[in-house]
Image (cartoon, rainbow, N blue to C red; front, top):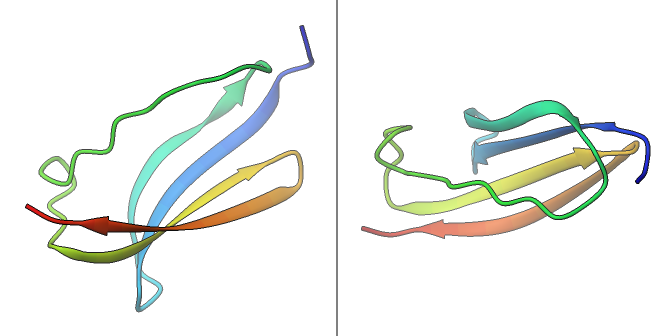
Length: 67
């Protein structure tokens, strides 16, 4: 099993405002799942950017919220 690394997953609106932090902790190597509830974070319908940071890398994905 690999050495734990810090993982951060955040959601931003298209104006650059952070609307949610889904994960911000050390994780061991492997697959993980997290649930993103728009009701919990009071997020409106629309397009958002999901940033995943780990091992000095940042991955950005577009997500669409609809009710």
